Every structure is written in structure tokens, then in C-alpha cells.
Amino acid sequence: MPRDPWFWVAALSSTLLLCILVWSLLYSFDVVDTFAEEKLALEHASGGLLYHIKRREMAVQLAVATGDLRWQERHRQSQQELTALAGQVARLSDTPVVAEQVAVLERHIAATRDMARQAFHHVSRGELEAANDLVKGWTYLKAELDLEETAQALTDTLRHRVRTRATLEKTTIAGVLVLVMMLIAVAVSAWAVAIRGWLSRQQRRQEREARHRYLSYHDPLTGLPNRRYFKECFASALALARRHRHDTAVMMVDVDRFKQLNDTQGHAVGDQVLVHLAAALQEDLRQSDLPARLGGEEFGILLPETGRQEAVKIAERVRRRVVERPPQAQGIRLPVTVSIGVAAVRGHVDPEALLERADRALYQAKQEGRNRVVCH
Image (cartoon, rainbow, N blue to C red; front, side, top):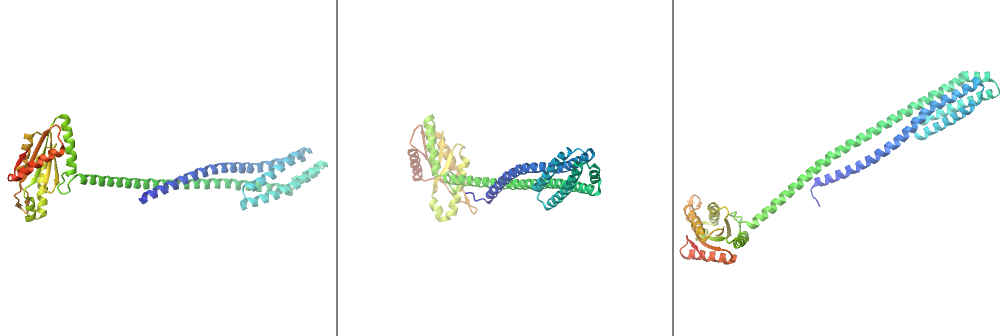
């Protein structure tokens, strides 16, 4: 499980962002559908109120003017539509202001309906003058005017409510978009930090693994390959030489009287001598050669594609290099020498057998007085 807190911040913000996006999408669809339906119904109701009020009033005026009672049916239809629209508005908008205006509107509708019935009653009895006096009278005109003003005020209220609702929904959606953008910024930043941290950890892990691999194949004091790496490369070089019938040589180098040097000068000086010898080997050898520290004061050198004579020349050059440029400790030159055993072969040979020959040559160099090269 990841331990980086930025990973959890990124995951949490991404999850929250996904939830908000899904919610905002569903909310937007619901708001659009609901608002469109409600807006359409309110606009229809608000527009229908004034239309049917005018239509109903015109029916009364025409009936009184012509004495034709067929206008009474149109008046009745407009009256029913007006009552239904008032009820629809009351159901669609349950705010106190709208409810109060609808109640006032219904009272005015009832009042004008009663007076219209009286006018139609006069017309039915042929009392057109009385009906005309009624609809032209102040009471009827005042009732119709109050009805129209109330309907107009209700219409304005409904339209204002629609605009307010639209503004609120726009503000809500804008707020959600701002929140989404903020969460996107947080998520992107958190993921960037988390990924950068992960890459950094991966790089450190790879560096540690490379360091471990390096230490498993190299000597920590001299930096040269160790015995394990030397033997693996030695076996590969001999296999390649057998395949192509090439010469291969190996050198075993040992510091003369190294134990005595450690006892008299100290181990720190002994380590300086080993480091100096490792540097000398790397300077004097070819790029294709492989020097390695096999243990203690003993070094091995693999010489690919190298015959016996050339190997001896290289060994002599190394020996002279150590003698001519000895290591120094506290400004004092240390008289250090090396003994070198060389073994060369062409084609197939067992790696251990070749190393054993080089060891015997080294032992012989020690027996013959040290500071010399012996080849088997």
C-alpha cells in the first residue's frame, strides 16, 4: 500500500472530483428538465390569465351589446380556464407571495363572475338597458380593473420568479464549475507530486540496487572487481578463446612482505599500498584487460587475446612501475615490490587449472627471491 500522503490526496481529490462531476451532470439534466417544464407551465399560466380575463370580459360586453346569449357559453369557458389557471399557478409556485396573490385573484374572479351572471340574467329577460348600466357601472368596471391588475401583478411575480430561479441555477452551476476547477487543480498538483515522488523513490531504489550489484562484484577498498566477478569474466573469456582459438593469459600479482608492512607501518598504510597498486594496474593495463583484487594483497589480471610473450612484457611493465613509483606514507617513499606469476593458454583449458598454473608461477617467483616475473 502506498505510503506517500500525496498519493492519498490525489486519489481522494480525484474520487471527489468524479463524484461531483457525476452529481453535477445528473443535477444539470434534472434542473434543465424541471426548470424547462416549470417555466413553460408558468409562462403558459401567466399569459393565459390575462388572455382569458380579456376574453371573458369581451364575451359579457358583446352579449350586452347584441343581446345574444350565445356569448354566455364563451364566458363560461373562459371562466373555467381562468379558474383552472389560477389553481395551476397555486400548485406550481407555493411561495407565500404567490399564494396571497392567487387568493386575491380568486376573490376578484368570483366577484366579477357574480356580476357577469347578473348581466346575463338581464340579457335573458330582455333588459338590455339594465344589463348595460350594470357593465358600465363603477362597481363592475372597478372589479374588472382590480382583476386585471391582480392578474398583471401575479404575472410579473411569476416572471420574476422564473428569472430568479434561472439566475440561481446559473449561480449554482457556476459554483460547481469553480469547485470542479479547484479540485482539478488540486488533483493534478497532487498527482504530479505523487508521481514525482514515486519516480524519485524508483530512482533511489534503482540506485540502491545498482550500488548493491556494484558492491557484490567490486572490492570496496580499491574499487577493482572482486574474485566473484573475476572468475565469471575469466570463464567467459576462456569459452570465447576456445571458440575462436585465441590466446588467453592470466597474471597473479602479490605484494612482497605485505604482512611485515602491516605489522611495522600499520593497516592504514597497508590499505594505501593496496589502493596505490590498484591505481597502477589500471594505468598500465590495456582497456581490454581486467584487473581484480582476489583477496588480501593478491591481485589477478585477465589478459584476453594475449600470448605468453606479450603477457610477460605486460607483467614486467607492471613490476617496474611499482618499483619506480612506489607509494608514499606521510611523505616517505615505501620500498614496495610485487611478485607476478603468469600463465597463458590457447584454446580450451579449465579455468581453475589455468589459475593454478599462475599460482604456481607466483609461488616460484616468491621462492626465487620476490620482485620478479615467472611464467608457466
